[in-house]
Image (cartoon, rainbow, N blue to C red; front, side):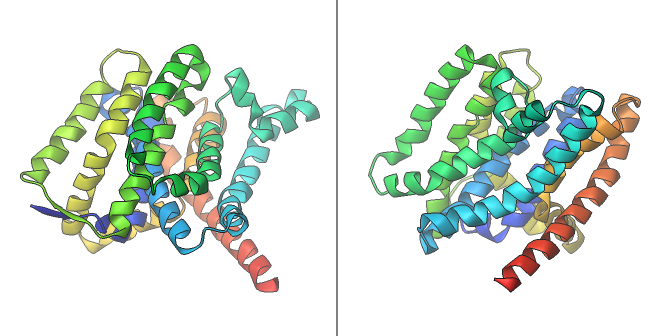
Length: 307
């Protein structure tokens, strides 16, 4: 069976939708082993983000425009959600210096992981242009594997940062995958369906085994790309409504990620029954994320128009 890597670009937004749905299922129902695999949605998101960055850098490697675009996509949404969250969570005992400390993301150093993903993706974006230049060297493909080993060791030492450290390698592996996507590589993979299914089942099993969580991240590094390939095979056969739904979710994946976990599950619905909370959180998060996404699009579009 022939697999075309350009399909990662063709179905990029849909794959973002798959990523955020997986993460939301994990956040809402992760207590049940059936949905524990959803944590690999973070790896999916990092791989797809890396592909988008590679294409951006292949067109324009100027640092200031690159960083400007990335920051405008992340920081406005993050600041709105984070300010609301920290104000309401600490309202009875609000300390402004502490509030600013939390907003800055430095609270992650103390093990407070409220918005850990934002710090992770910003560091990846910061390093990406320099890593892109390193990729011209023949053996640069080995760097993500070296990074995986180093970050795994650091995760053993700094346990509270394990969730961040063990995710860096997959982003940079995604940049190498993006080169194949950009060059429209094609490979012949016998029984590709079976390979993708086995990769997914291995992720499910690993996330059910009682082991050091860092091993699950390693499994995510190894298996997430084959699983994404399987998702592409399914998308090729999916109906139009499925594509429309995933595009809708994928376009506001960042807003959904922050709002669903912190605003819905922890703040608005924190006292409700676990199962009911999980079910109700989906429509509330989708509505709030949609409103935020549209408001930011309108505001930032107007700013761009004035410039």
